[in-house]
Amino acid sequence: ELAHQGDIISDLNQVYDSLMPHNEVPAEALKPVIDTTQLAEWEGESALIDEHLAEHTRSEEDSILVQAEQIIAIHLIPKSGRALEGRTVLRLLRKYGLRFGEMDLFHRFEETTGEGAMMFSVLKYTPDGPAGFELETIEQENFEGLSFFLALPGIKPLQGFDMMMSTAQRLGSECYAQLLDDQMNLLSEQLKSHYRHQVLDFRPTR
Image 1: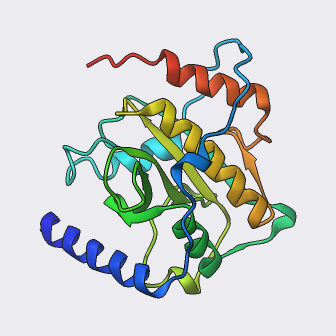
Image 2: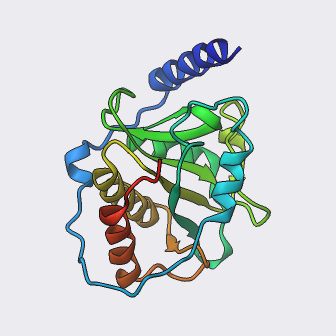
């Protein structure tokens, strides 16, 4: 069944590749220079993301995502209470090389073709918790926000973090939205640096 779902997702991605003009941004352009100022240890967890991943544990036990030991998450929320139009969300996600796939999320891989290491993932943000996307109806929907997350351990976690931050910032600029942390406060430069140190210092426990 999972193999069949994978074939369907692949077919859908090919259809959207052919229909959507997205002018993908190369990976090299998504590697920002980030201040690495130290910050005292912060124990915040992304409970909403953990909950979404846990729901898929039984059906996708070998997934890198459901086996994550730590999640680094940020949220992109429209300013002034505006909603994100689904068609705009789809266009921007594809523009920055994300592809629809596992767990009904959009994933950014090392290569825009979907090959290479998984860099980070995106799901839709709701006040009640995270949710996957319905690719067939995404263009007709409006979203309260997007949640970007990096699962640790990863194959290239630091590259994934830098790419995630750069992509989220660019999307924010293009759709008039702001980046928030797990506590739904504006994401500060200091906390960005702390997140990056967490990625650098992370050591798997299993």
